[in-house]
Length: 638
Ligand code: F3S
Image (cartoon, rainbow, N blue to C red):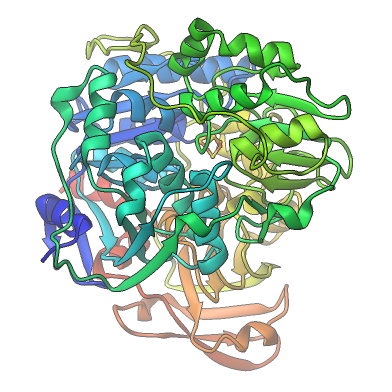
């Protein structure tokens, strides 16, 4: 009576008990990195002194930062290409596509585990995998053959009933789940989808749902591996990768949620959070300035064929800029071959590269106070590059219909036939470079490639000032913004730290340097959003010793530990109100022990309060060593 998640985890268990809340370690079969997190992951991997990666398959994708306005990105790509070649990693060249879409097409395999240094790695759950997003250092450790440690999540069953109506898509299903559960609703959980409603969902549609499980804060999401999975793999020329996988009929779940797909309406997530969901009809008539279609959520062939069918023979509204980025070279070539690309161009769409593009702020920022409808997964404040713009998340069908109308509207009344999977996908792996694994291979390092910064072991005592006090739901975009100006410094922590908290507290960097670092105070769900390790590495460089929050997003908490920063939790959340920025807080770190709270003194105001840390024995060792890399080096020296 096992769930599918339990079956895959049991097959990969290295240690621990598969009981919700218990620490477990699992073997990782595959890894992926993207360029924004990958340079640091490979620098960390190199620092471990391994001869070659030890996974079944490891990929390095270049999809985030592909603009070449200066030497930095080009140098980073050369580093990524040569380090991959040296250590046995397949390198996906810029232009080959977005990591999750390419991985789905060419590498995802039912029953396997995947660890990726990108928060949307769970996209691969569409193929019946346990796919988890993590920081770059955790991925580097998996490449070195180490198991991945996590707390066993609760397993939630989402039962989908009935067929989706015309004009309503997979995106609307996951927006519905977000509206019900919120951006914190998936923390510590795996979402397993079942029910007759999944039979009508193709693997790419399932990937849209698993992708935005990340916005729920979930550890991962997954679907069974069934007939639809088999069909997709055969059409990708990978029929031999198929295995049938499903939960036992009497599997017991921690929670169950039922959704009637037939009752769903087109939905939209409003600024500035993916869970601020409303029916499209409530926003009908709102003028739209920009429509952006693409991203790892909605850029599959069938997504873009649906857009092309809605746009065919029509013209984009004169007040709207429609930009389209393609999920992969495969998608782009197939659209080109079948003529749908011409339909998009004829309608007035502007075509971008097969990369993340506007999703990570690489151009196409909306106008001041603009309304931008996007098929993406995130609409956090400022992520688009225009602080005053409002980003609305919708399905490809709603995006296309609104691009024609010039106002928010659904595709429910537009007469078109929803595209099906093609007879066969076009296989072209020419931009996937196989590694030579030559130990003599020279690894090219431009001047922007700087080593991983050194960190001291945990001090016996922290006696420092609070450098910043922030509220609830602070994202990694708030802590370490992305965009075309900042991302080129992803392999240069000293430089990138200048931008840490720059959008909400421009003095933060200089204040930390002046006072030798200190504390960060935060509210609920601290560090939600991307897996960006730099949101922990930049504070580490600025000598932040500890964060005290009401709660954390999973990946960021792990990244803090890996960076040697204490992730503390208020025992009484009311204490958050009592402490001010620039208060002096003192704690005895020698008292750090499993299951034991720590007592902190606010020396500025003269009171004490307790904090928990929820750290396992392994995590405490990492913190005491001054981070995971220090701990690995220490172990290697023994
Ligand atoms: Fe890229 Fe945006 Fe996905 S940055 S990996 S398309 S969330």
